[in-house]
Length: 240
Ligand SMILES: [Zn+2]
Ligand SMILES: [Zn+2]
Image 1 (cartoon, rainbow, N blue to C red):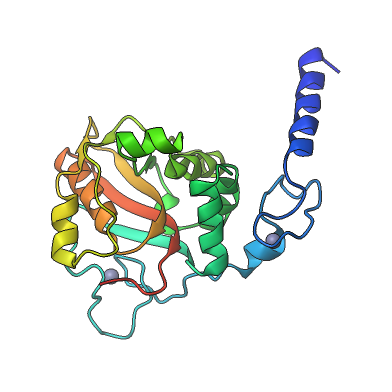
Image 2 (cartoon, helix red, strand yellow; image 1 turned 180 degrees about the vertical axis):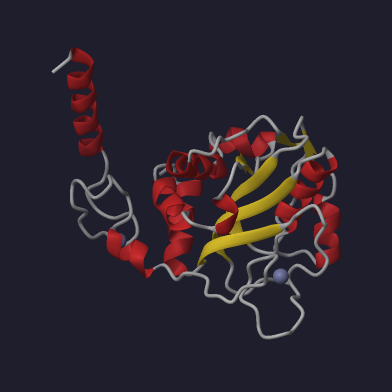
């Protein structure tokens, strides 16, 4: 065996040994070669897919001809959004492990669940929703970037972290009214040279789409050919 291959095999073995042998969500033992996942196959299979038929635009389950109240006042710059699973207890825990506990390889499992989402086809570039400078410094990494990198390994689409910048921190959105939320986010992003590009924003959780819409507005204004969004999870009770 060539030297580097041997070294690589040793390092992989060491890494596997350092990783927890139990699922980060349910504590069950994980088989050594189960995709080197940090979340077991059973937990992943229990995540609930967002069921169709969907609102063509925002990806929320649609009810007959009723007008969608999620995307009615989105900026035209955001074409469509799709999410893989509902943000139930298990999905929420997975996001938490990735976002706040430093288990960045959980992104692999999230990306696996996101494979096949409609916006991820064609010649698209992936843009992780950026964090503000302060939050990025506190956390040390951007969870959306980790998800985008894992998606890129599956789809071959390039990840571009140089095209969108968060110019100011925004307050936590959950307690704000829709009007206050829009004001809170307007002008929060600036875009680089994106003329003619087909872009897909990548984020961990979809709540109201306000953040994606704000980012898409900046990208569309800078000349992007199209802007879609994908997220791993979708909040169960969106605050409309
Ligand atoms: Zn599990
Ligand atoms: Zn909709």
